[in-house]
Image (cartoon, rainbow, N blue to C red):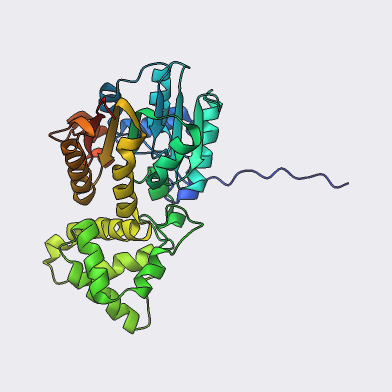
Length: 351
């Protein structure tokens, strides 16, 4: 029988790889901890990894006690989940939800490897809009709930997922890449006014009309927007009327807002958030606490109004009057924290 030849892992050339799949050290944080720490110390997020935001502020508010039952409505990389599990000290249980089958499986395996097994952590591939089904299935209401509405860095960094304009890849943007239409397919089926409205409502995009018009122009010319680079170039063309000195920064910000708007649309994020906020009081135990992290004005407005409306009818005994923001120090260390806002509420004792 022929001897099987050992095949060496393909390593990147030079010291600073640019392609996502070549960053083998960053993509294995447990194995290359020293290298990853150097990247973190520079204020960057290693590829394929996610740095959790406002962990201290969240834990201070939730005041988690051993034996309690909690929910992480958006598991992601599991950083917040792990911090909350530590507070339980081996007593109690956390249920964690996520719609991304790829990253949730990785996170579950990572947390199990750290000793958080089925006896204390249950991971469910489920949208937080269906949070009531967890309580129906388990019969247990939550003493604490966290919902981090941001997209995880692992999703943003991987060009194949289509979340970033910084690298070329398919314009996908689905949180669950196994379901629904892609961002490219959505742009191909909407009219000019619909695209413009989507950009305004989901991202407050000031150049929505010009971007929508350019997307339609490209379609009529037989070159529909199908990749992340296509969309970036399309936005750059739409903003070419601006003074040269302003174009680079304006294109960057419009790209961020446009990608966000399309992502929110194709994943039904606002509808899911509305359903989640409406169902929250019914899944919280008396005096149960909930914290929500938002990353753009539309999300924050929805969360603020929902908390206030439910407080007026007695569902909550207290809600945040002002947003809590990450510290300046955290924003320096993690630039992706800058747009974060945290709001909270405490369930009434009587239900």
